[in-house]
Length: 301
Image 1 (tube, rainbow, N blue to C red):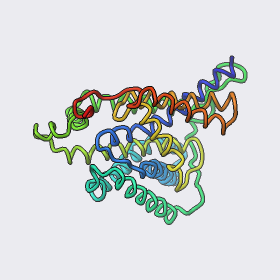
Image 2 (cartoon, one colour):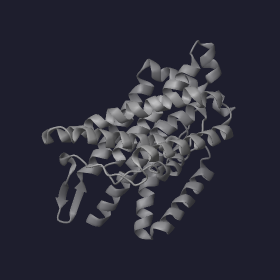
Image 3 (cartoon, rainbow, N blue to C red):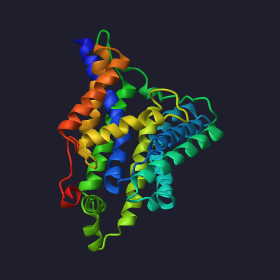
Image 4 (cartoon, rainbow, N blue to C red):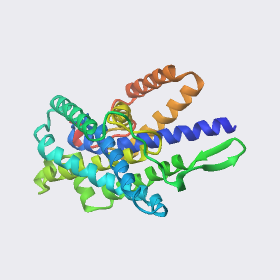
């Protein structure tokens, strides 16, 4: 029973990473129909911001070192969001309603950002030391321990989901975002500046990707290709869950993460990945628009 419980926990842990990485992409892809292949590089930016924050705290008294990670989370959000805002203002704004062009352009941007990271930080991966209060784990029984790092990531994902929920459904900004997402032409006729909504929505989505990068520093070393390892999985989460839906992103991430760890446990890593792809294809045959979708005349057309 302990082994099965540990597998369930590992599945939820993997799912939390996928949800956090896909959270911003679900909104930007659903709002602007932009295939952003540079989304993984915003994850990388958040990871390197955490690395820089750690280096700054190394010069401070040791008693303060544990605070660096708590400050790195908002710093990753702000820096990644600012880079996303600049990218939207300079490149993305010219590619609306041109999905293939946006795919090629953002793929080129991702290569530029990766090379820029190599020039600044070097080609080898770098390590980020986790705070002392995240070392160890919660012991449930003999041989069953839940690492504090993964528990913290799960709590962080829940906080981010709640923050996105309140932003989208309890704020004036969120109402504008949902209006543009459901019917852009009608929103424009009501006086909403849709281009401005696009800009800060893209920035918010990029910021959440930065938080995902910050969380990933707890699980291993980071490098310029960190985001590349997650870009395919994040798109699968968005497409399976339903484009532009918050609950769909959470459901898609949970399904893919738990299925991945369970099937790999029952078979092996390669066959488990193949079975996950087959499961996703089967579900999309049944629900082509994803598990959850937004109902509106604009999207139905």
